[in-house]
Image (cartoon, rainbow, N blue to C red; front, side, top):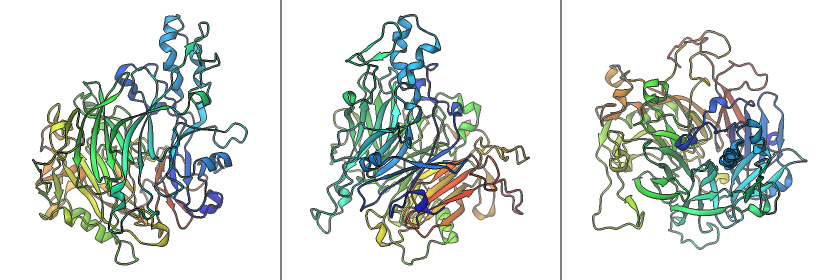
Length: 625
């Protein structure tokens, strides 16, 4: 479809496509730490809805549009909302359970335990609402915020609420979490600010990105003033039904948990036996990957942090991934020693809360310009990707015992970057060519291994170059975000439409990659054996042997779970925004039902490309994918 029809004629702007569904996040049957782990199998109230956000350097408004993929019907937010949210970034749903837990304890005290008592959970219209992050580093767009949009696209009922104070911070990612342990879903977010890059304050030789700062913040959801003694309904101070998004309760109280995180992050439970969760943050401006352990409770706080890697470049994505195939085995799902997902860190969710995972995927968003206007050829790209995983190289990070960092003073912290690097032919860090996709293995050899041992880094792919043009002169880089997904919704090798297929369950996911200013999108598939010298050596089939111990999954210094090859390169001849993956049939187009649909936004071309995967039964080559 032409982008002009999709986004109301907006000229310029990057499209961020989202796979969004109504969420039934009623966690009444979960207690304690399990309240983090939401079963998305209950997420069947509606079909796929795609959200697209658009923005422009010249227009004082953003764009928020939605598409029903089944019918092709589109709608958009009203002008008032669009003019308030000038640079919308990520779009997420709002959990419908957001009021139940606040008065469940009170209800129990009144002897009210029937389901009808909780019918007030939808009083504030959250059955159809969005959480939108807003802002960017350019003048006029740098005063961002976090917005709730109720009934988006409904001309009569749409309402926009800002949860922040309008200061000079912009937000890329925000998630709902109960950090206080009382059932309230508050907001955990990363925010950033940078001196204006267009006001001439930065010296010509100074890297303006080094001036950027980031913070990990907690926005506490307000509590009701009281409860109705008869019905149990939450009440505000004026006696009206309590609404956490009313003018009297906004903006929400914001607390800074830590410094550093600025753009993207994921959340894990690296030790399920304690009362902490861990934020793994890609620090774009300070060019490092960090970990922040949050103590849960009435006053959440960071009690431990460490720098995982400070040689990763401008870190962008931070996505929890199961490259070992742990979540596909019941044995590993029952293993309490494994790290667990709290929030995968991506708008494409291939792992649910409570699933085990093995790696963190991080993109290094670098600005290395291509020497020619042509895109990187598939054969060259594959060759670099494979070569970058040949031998282990000692960590190039020098530890200066005389230096002292302010990072983490005042509480338990490891300020020494600790990472083992897997790259090619004994080359050092300087040989990584342009932007890259890294995989960091979570150390699991003992209880606190993630705190003390190096996180082994493998280079999955490198060589991403910026295709320079006038439209991407502000903060150009490549690649963009990364994603993991399976060809089918249930991970099975059949077409989910009743036709026979391979019947095989894929244990390791595909990886999707937005090239951003590389002007392409990429799909990578796992290599399940060592092909060096033509000798195939299958991966161990024992899940436990791939999890415990320091070197079990390594062969000649290579983390075999990170071996991927290029399955498909989509050359777009334009900046590529955030991809989306859906599984519902796209309109009436001919397609294999149940297989993934890949949505690729093309910025300068004002187009969104849609690609459908299939069973491959009509192909001569059968490679298992």
